[in-house]
Image 1 (cartoon, protein in one colour):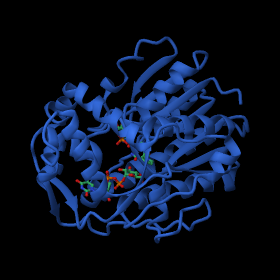
Image 2: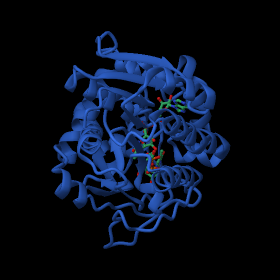
Image 3: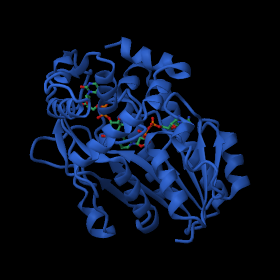
Image 4: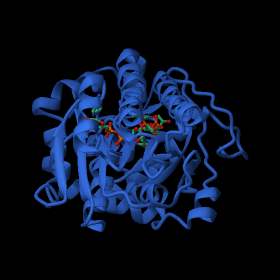
Length: 351
Ligand code: NAD
Ligand code: DAU
């Protein structure tokens, strides 16, 4: 494809910042425009190393603002869109589903409309929507989500993501908008806001706070290193077939309690203290309502058709992640205090 000017939404967030960095560094001829509202989860500190590159630009904006999105698309004439902006945390969606409907559904439809109105049926454009494996709901032991698994979301978050997926497909079916969708499993790595399992546990270990494990800790998630997700997005954006859905996963299933125990022993090693010290902080707490038991994903279509595969084994990726947090305590303290403190303490106090 010949895309040169690319809009990345949500580029100041966890995954978005890794995608922006990859594209800015790998494609010096492209113009990368990062549009982000900078909610509690968006943080320009995540992009300090590339913010002065000539092929990068940041625009603060809200995808829920339909007229602003239309004007942006008309002014900029993007060749492609990689849409990551979203409210992303399941626990928050249980507290405030409306915000998820606004950003994840209405915001996505606003971008689709803006692309439709300004792209004039140009089939060389690409509207790439970043979805999640959570739209499939929970899967039984022994089975995997494929791209043909029926959509069956269970939480307000996954329902809002499923709603946006349906709209993206509908714009392809109804108006021939050239779209791509990918559905990825749980990411981990640097710049992950400490409301999600792995960074929350790292932060609480460092602060000697309880490690809240929901229910019995038997829920299973498939974990993928965030830079591997970014490289999959690169492959799909450039080589994927429009109208298609691609699953992305790490072939790396962990029960939550096993993962937390493994992380505890890694932290004990890194902090040079007796094995078992961090695990003493594990505290079983009330389960997440409607908690999906197991996510497990078959990403063979992506691997076979586009030649992508994960680059890191989990043990190596988790150690890199822990090292990043230990070397970036200032980042951690900034996002759990100052302007982000209300959001952080609000979530934490609910446990
Ligand atoms: P995140 O919460 O870290 O980042 C989301 C970003 O979107 C933030 O920078 C935020 O400021 C921005 N944003 C939120 N509302 C906005 C709005 N109205 N207008 C403009 N910007 C807005 O999320 P993440 O974990 O990086 O996830 C990114 C995308 O990937 C999401 O679409 C999510 O559903 C999807 N996804 C995440 C995972 C995961 O494990 N984290 C896995 C699969 C898919
Ligand atoms: O599968 C992809 C999804 O992964 C993404 O679409 C979401 O944006 C992302 O947040 C993530 O959703 P999860 O709900 O799986 O992630 P989270 O880190 O919140 O929780 C992982 C598991 O750990 C889940 O079973 C709930 C459990 N958990 C989580 C937290 C925050 C705990 O036991 N204790 C906790 O404190």
